[in-house]
Image: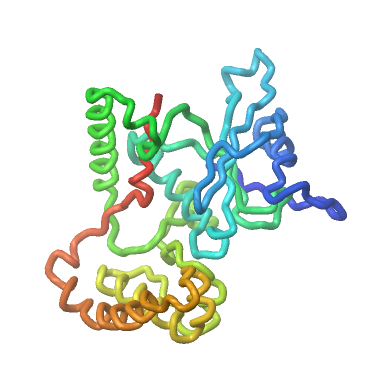
Length: 289
């Protein structure tokens, strides 16, 4: 079970940056009993996460027991301002790792809030050498390697399709449950921006839902509500240029029509079949070296 880290910021100390990379050494001491070097730069940056490769100072006699490299996965502001949940991410990773042969990273520890010395939610996970399929490395691979990678990915999708649920939602650990690895389906952890403000302006349905029609209707209704009640915030959030309101007008017309036609487009006998676990970042499947 990953360690839920309690690592409050030191009183009176100003962080050197956000995230404060100088504090990773204290985190690895708590998890592994050894410090790490402060990373000079991020290993990889995406819209929702910054990855930092941490090199641990592991004595030779402990290298069979303690990893020499781990990844710090730090949430960005865009992620923390949405409903994307680190608790759900960690629970899903542990769930998939325990029920399939998919090579999911091991989670050593995590802190799901900003109330820590790093300054953002973060997790410490295992590191594997490799590239993502969207990188330039893909074009230089041989045909045989590409085919092998695609087959591996197909096997991952097949494994995920065996994990079935009766509702649409996100996985979470069940607090205080026995056995230790107990999970439940809770509110969906989707990436709608400015979620805290949205919740203050009317109903905010995040499920879980028994049918996909209810999921799609809730997603569209909430987006329409966001545009109607907070138009200036919605415009800035979606970066609509001043004076160029064509996309805005189209959204105002199309989204309500789509919401009102959900029953026509999606409610059929197959809509009440089992719900499968999906992998949201499939376009960035990892190529292990």
